[in-house]
Length: 154
Image (cartoon, rainbow, N blue to C red):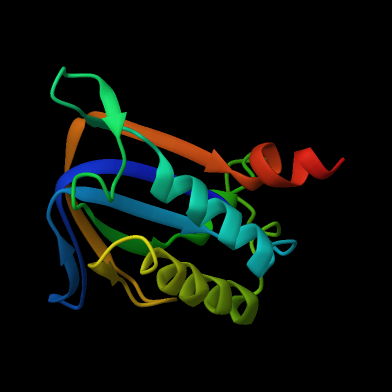
């Protein structure tokens, strides 16, 4: 599982001109699912994501979590996070999870995020979407389960 996390002042996702989800201060989460991901991996990734202390405290230090600041989450499925560009000029997506698995884990991630924050919005799995955001910082982090979760088992 791969997550590109952007701390945002606001973000929204639209399909065919209709806004499906919009948030203010919080995280825009671009989520890619691989064919080896499980609910256990998804849970660990969401737990890490929601506990990250990347909001400024009263001293200006990045020391507060999403729940500490009453932040919100917008989750957008993004199979292209598993693009393999190692050969040729056209990316291959063979490492991305099959749509049924990816959609199930995407929905699981959205629900798991609701354990941490009150407002969790999301896009439409498999749809052509437009995402708008105002990155705060900018502050962008990449979380990869191969480095965080799966590697620890080996």
